[in-house]
Length: 445
Image (tube, rainbow, N blue to C red; front, side, top):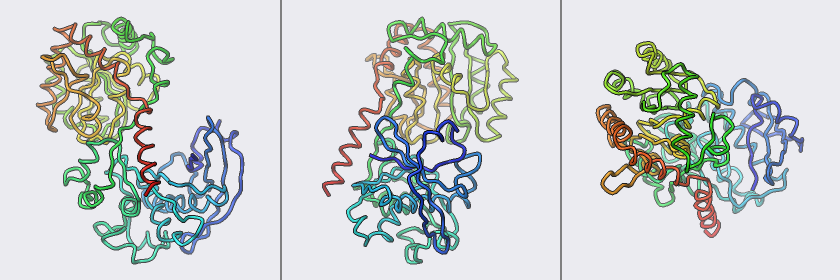
């Protein structure tokens, strides 16, 4: 297995000394002739190749404006394919991810299909979020890619008058995957297909949903260096109380272990349910003995909304606008519940990380949240979290009140919930087996 990624100038500078120059060559993007440098590094037996071109990959962030990125990633897709003979590696399968690599299967099938070196190479294309499709003007993308006009028809790369990289990846790949079984069904509907539901229905015979995993070494309450007190399932109740007290003290909240602390580590966007949160905040904070802790950034209106409620309820709400690794780990380890009321959620990682720390998810039943969180059933003593079906603030409030009641009034039931959540296994091992089966099936075709 080999991994190929851009050599971004903004990546941690400590990695640069670990890269070894392999070679350089040039690729053509229509009338453009562009330099490609290949650097190599090895990590745990895996070869990583970095595509070097400062014109495309310099700057303070991996992504820029869409009109810049459509050329950047057309270049990257072509550079990856043309690098293969230089590294003397003809893979059975190239696994592409998201719109940024959507043109790679297109180039492979249409430009390199007659070249003996590339004969038999198959592609798997994974969609992590259907909302981001790499759409841009047809004529500009034709000029960038050098692909013939016939490929920009409605059954190939054209979509609603624009070129669409994600659509190209779906049309030309042998297998399409996404990051949860429920999301695979949702993107084939009008509500979840983001305008491509018809296309996704047409590829349903080779569309698969495989839930992502999390790193069980990084997210381990027993060894996590970022949390105040390490703990295991056996002493989770005491461990979480001590972490909660440390976080409350750090954030200037009243130090109490009986208050219901709800955390949220998230991008602050409509997708993540911040419209519902805005609607519900006054009712939740005025009627319940709770503390809300937010960590994240995103749209200005939602950042300002959280700041507003922090000012209105200074004894109950704390926020950190931005990202802080240590603080995020402390929120997972300290909170009693994690809130994820998403409009849609392809997979979601926060709910898996939270359960690892005995923190109970409160989620909307969509995408990977539905696949990974089993709703609490008090009559059968089952479940790992709380969920609601419709994107509705009143439903969210109701289920949060229910979770609050269990936490406050049924301590044994809450402890059992924590144990079941911590017993769940969302490591990459099960996901890897699913991908292996998929790769084997594709190689047999």
